[in-house]
Length: 107
Length: 112
Image 1 (cartoon, each protein chain N blue to C red):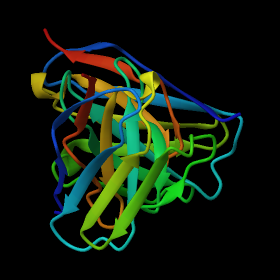
Image 2: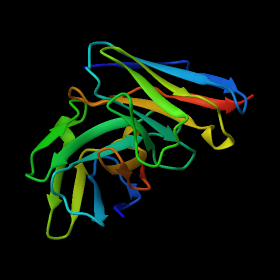
Image 3: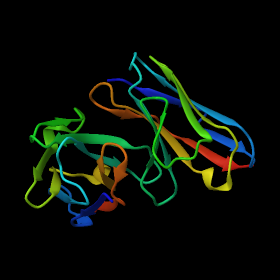
Image 4: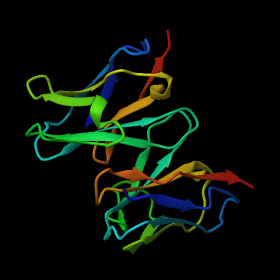
């Protein structure tokens, strides 16, 4: 099974900061990777699919890149509503697998 | 607007079967994969499995021996059954139309 490792596990940042979260797969997954934002008590929300395609309605400050085993999610200028937990998901191979999450907190 | 809503018992006894249904509105099943995902409190997301409109399924090997998914196109809903549950199956269960639409989630507690 493919394992997805996110780093960091937690991150403190300020409004306006640029932040990057990484996700690494234990084997190549082409670009079959999505990024999700989850707020407490809510379902995950799709931000990015196919590694770099912005989901409709998601602000352009979110961007994704990568292919193969290494991927990044970048938020160009943090807004107050961006403080949440972020997950990556590979749907290249069964069983699909999520990263362990990155909790983004206010500094 | 596509909407998904999980329903079912919120409390299941150990060794019994967890049964959840996901009602889909605003869309039909055609052309999409439909997944179940769960999340124990304070933990990461776990993919349980998926079903296609043809009825074909793929399950997480960690749960495969206990999981059954089905769909009812006439009722626009799909279902999850997980048998022989233990406390480790306590979690919020989500249904999703991969991956842009999710239900709000349903807490299922396994306890006697």
